Image 1 (cartoon, rainbow, N blue to C red):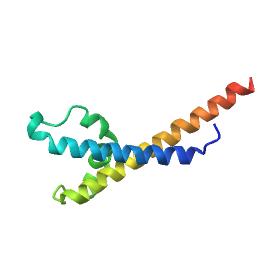
Image 2 (cartoon, one colour):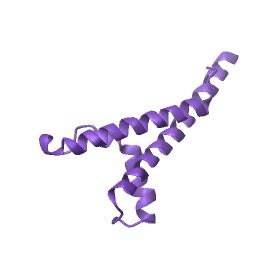
Image 3 (tube, rainbow, N blue to C red):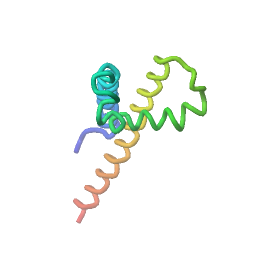
Image 4 (cartoon, rainbow, N blue to C red):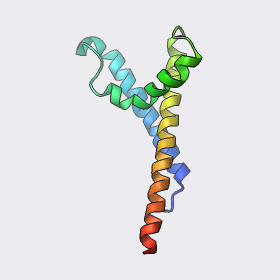
Length: 102
C-alpha cells in the first residue's frame, strides 16, 4: 500500500459527507411517503449525529437554524470518519509491516 494514510482518510471523509447529504436529503423529502425517516438514515448519519449530540449541542443551543446545524453535522461526519479511517489504515499498515517482517 503506497497511498498515504491521510489521502485515504480524507477521501473516505469526503465520500461519507456525500453519502450523508444524499441520505439526509432523501430521508427529508420522503418522510411523508415513508411515514417516517428512511431506513438506515441513523446508521449512515451516525458519525455526524454523534458530534451534534456530544460536541455541538453543549456549545450551542438547540435553537440554531437548519443550515448551520446541517453544516455542523456534515463537518462532524467528515471529521469522525476521517479520524477513524486514519486510525484503521495506520494500524492496518503497521500490522502488514509486522507480518511481512516475519
